[in-house]
Amino acid sequence: MRTASLIQSATPAASRALILLSCLVLVCLLGLASVALGSSGMPLDRVVLAILGAGERSDTIIIWSLRMPRLLMAALCGVTLALAGFILQRATRNELASPAVLGIVDGAALGVMVFLLMFSNGSNALVVSIMWQPLAAVLGAMLFAGVVILLALRTDAPPLRTILYGVALGALAKAGVTLFLVDGPVHRASQATMWLAGSVYQARWQDVQVLTVALLMLVPIAFLLSRRMDQLQLDELSAQATGLPVRFTQLMLFALAAFLTAAAVSFAGAIGFVGLIAPHVARLILPGRAGTQMLAAALVGAAMVMAADMMVRTLFAPLEVPAGAVTAMIGAPYFLFILIRAGRIHA
Image: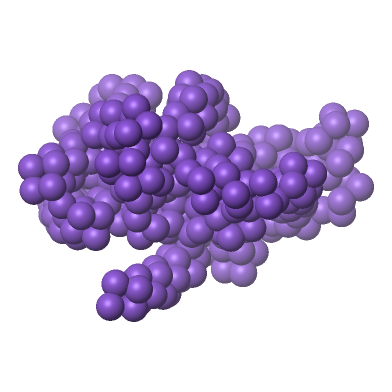
């Protein structure tokens, strides 16, 4: 904590505000570009008029009915996954931790697949409301996060072994998803494959509203726990000496990360590596305490998913390529880089 305080003091408040403002401007510019680009490009002046409700009717319909829900869903999912990754890295004191690496994303995906198969009729139509799908994702995420926590606590595992538990359980969840895909109808398998790769293609206003509500409930909790996250950066004995109940705090953070992950995955699928990369970028551009870094990570995560979705929409049109493919292409080499660097440090 002392080191964090020194770094925090070395980064003036004005500089931190400027960095956060720059990230926010980047997100806004990406948002404007995202709604302007598409199958029918639109000049920025028409985009602005349509957003303000003063444009032509056709422009207003294209932006508010088609592009804006997709854009907002991408931004919200980026924020959610980035926060989940940041919280997990603080909880485990391991920069390799992320919802995907710890198997939480795959657990949520498995929960959704079980839900789809259990509550679909012979025509592959859901017999219950789609609003129950997030609950299935939460249950799957919590189950796998809980098993990882139990294994880590029972064996008193160091952070790296906790990561390996997550990788193993993630592989188990992936195997379960594959079995459900093979056993299901071909067209349902095709839809599920797109969803599992991570896509905001089918975003609707209703989904955006539900995810917004979830974030409004979970994000304040994350910021309330930011002081504890700073304390967790100390070694375990020192953290306990400051009055922090270490294990209980880690359990709370794991649960919070699982809820955040499930909220994003239930609507946009398994968009990978956002939760790994965004916290790293936040630490790089804004050293300091957890509260400030969480803001930066959230903005970076939003920018990542928005940019990835814009790329797949424009580069591969008219095909629909999942945004998760882009984040995985960037994230997988970065994960290997961090893994190799961590190995050198331990050596």
